[in-house]
Length: 525
Image (cartoon, rainbow, N blue to C red; front, side):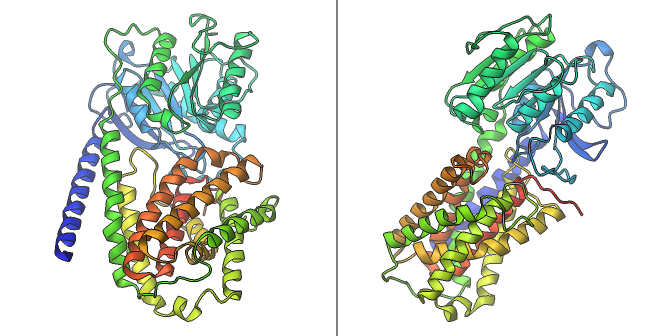
């Protein structure tokens, strides 16, 4: 049986590598695209319709009559230009150049982010650099430019559009805030049916109504005239949320029709929304999740074996303690984040909350003699080695399949942030595992899933109560997927070793890495 499992795991690993290799081929294909840096060390990727050439180093520009209009594409708060690549490719495949950028403190941009996502001036400068690049480029029609953004990028795009009267239009995806001395030209507000209603849907519709000069904007109804530059419309995309809208073919088609009207394009064929990377990335993700099972078991076979624990802490009591500690910690971090030295916006508050919760739980378990210190630190080197190997595999594999999601490789600053966040969150995950993971594999897995659901639920409650930043609600679905993957690894490692410290170390590193890679960073060496 073991031989069959080992052979099956090896075949799955080979299949995973083959899928990743194919994903790389698709990543390099598609519309012509190339990455470089704009003035100010702003990372950018340029996508061009048609052809097979490098838009950053090409020598011979097309004649003016054949130069395409262009779009500046701006990502959201915990996002980067890689996350916008599916929409960028769809726009380029339909005839328009796209310049996607990483804002300060995001993705590969090593310029520090100010400690607020409402710093209009900082974001405005990044977008201005992109617009200036396009206006001076001999490969696009610099007189026809639209700014487009998602979430925070939508607000920044609308703000910039109010400061640049020479734009042809603006597209706000799931976001927007008012501002600027000028009326933004040809403004489209598009959002998902499952976007937060008050914060995004109602706000977007209200701004559209204000621009249209009506009390209430009827969704799907265009006001104004494209020729005069005062067209405005608010559109809801059904069955998508704040993240899904970026990959929605219907949203892409809606945006493309708006661009056609803004640029006066008479389209003869159907709008192309294909991006084969999306489907292949989902297959790669599924294979990755399945491979977490043999990875967890392999790590468990390296780490020292612990005894199965079943006592009075097992069951609902552990979950109750987890919930009480998590709720009790919130007021302690509401005004001043103890871990404000972690240079991550939101990440400092998240890690502070989990750290304080962890101190409460771990301290209580130690006082109640529910943590065997000899067992915890016995064989520590072997446990740490097993955790390091497991996390290294996760880091490489997940990074390889994230081509449409986010840049997961760490800059030196982000590596430092990960180390800081890991060091203070480890007590939480140790306490979490000692509370919820008791008994056999089935019972412990159910307890683990319930415990993770509790943390997510309390996170949402904290955001609505104003203790945690509301923006965290928008990424809860991503956190839910991460927690589910963590549980797959945890259950597999537990089945083969019962070593809770091994699981806690991997969970800590995994969450800290995700936070460090995706949260805006406020520090640069």
